[in-house]
Amino acid sequence: MTAQSNAATVKIFDTTMRDGEQSPGAAMTLEDKVELGRILEQMGVDIIEAGFPAASNGDFEAVRAVGGVLQNSILCGLSRASPKDIERCAEVIRSAPRGRIHTFISTSPIHRKHKLNMSQEQVLDAVTASVTLARNFTDDVEWSAEDATRTERDFLRRCVEAAIKAGAGTINIPDTVGYSFPDEYRAIFEDLIANVPGADSVVFSSHCHNDLGLAVANSLAAVQGGARQIECAVNGLGERAGNAALEEIVMALRVRGEDLPFQTAVDPAHLMRASQTVSRITGFPVQYNKAIVGKNAFSHESGIHQDGMLKNTQTYEIMRPEDVGQGATSLVMGKLSGRHAFKNKLEELGYALSDNALADAFHRFKELCDRKRHVFDEDIIALVDDQIAHADAAIQVTRLRVVAGTDGPQTAEIDLLVNDEQVWKTARGAGPVDAIFNAIKAAAPHEATLELYQVQAVTEGTDAQATVSVRLSANGRSVSGRASDADTLVASARAYVAALNRLVALQGRSGDANAAA
Ligand code: KIV
Ligand code: ZN
Image 1 (cartoon, rainbow, N blue to C red):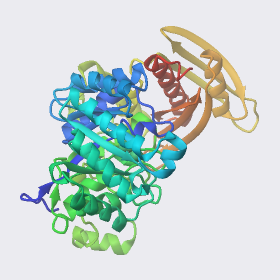
Image 2: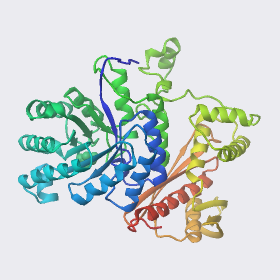
Image 3: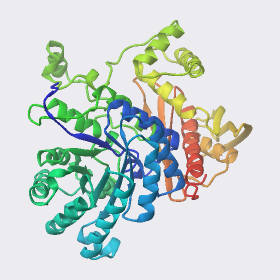
Image 4: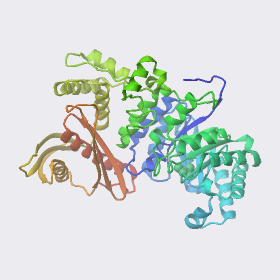
């Protein structure tokens, strides 16, 4: 891996909590955002876009809470080109030592006509007015031209010039619909930097969507064209097909540092942890063959590859798993392992639990050892992530019994703790999972509908833990829940309840009755 000590720097702007959260089912609670904000800062992310403060009181509070835990990273909030949005944003960024207002307006003809119903001159006036207002609150203002890549080049130049004149220090040129090819995107930056007055005094930024699978390639092309900030998201989360994946950008710049001599401040050893945290929070599984952070990213199955790897790992690996925080799978302690060894293992995996949480995790680990012959690092990670996700939840599964098999009827009997009150219900269903979900609905009545149910094995073998993801939707909002257990049906019940808890939490957070359970 190449580390270029004298290479120029590219800033990493993370938008997992803003553009990423706009992905259906990826809604995050305030606590989720605070946890993720801490990890991103620890990792060395320069700017953290934590949300859209004017969207709701809940969004406002969540962005403010993230700011409260930041010391080095810049806290950023998004705002439309409206005074109300910008003022809300200005208020919230004060919670961090350093704050940025990010204001945007669409510039393309199709957006101007169908979305804004504004002329070119009106858009230009809005650019000047929004950036000028934002500059009254902070020196750090970013301006974005939404759908920049489908904007007439002449007009884009005029908009960028207006934003720079009004005081924007960062100019973002988003490929909002993921339409560009790398050479086209690079040429836009080269053109703007060469031809717009004042361009040499600002930082140009890329923001690429992945509709054609080109987001990372386009972001790197932007850097070749002069961009010095890349907007990206962990696991490539974002609207539709997502944004450029942060982990891929960081590693591409490191591994190919000799050809693209730019460095970032991100410590790649945190990439795996960030990826798994985002996956747990959103309930979106990471694709097995996902670059850098996928389960198979460093696996070698074929005999020829394995032979090469044994002789020299560089035969088939351009980076080492440990560089990105993917520990080699190792067998961990079994039944006889003590609390001290367990605590050391957690620390090695990047967890710092309180004494009480450690005691709970150790208890669950011992239970797992009774049910599963070999316990791997992945099992420990699933177990602890599961515990963190379900701690202090309003609704908890305390007992489950299921009757399934060929003879039916499939029946589930469930005990739920709902706001500290024990509720028992039984229900039938078309199968065991259906019966469980019906029983939960009887015990905690709600209007949400099931959008997705998915099971994944954490490791190999029939005694593997199952990780179940459930997506529920209510009032136009979808949320995901995830749970892991050696018993797939128990994991199913807990995943459903986790999603339900998230709906309840978001209902509290939104203050606009957006989410209802
Ligand atoms: O994709 C986009 O254009 C955006 C802007 C708001 C920056 O997300
Ligand atoms: Zn976007």
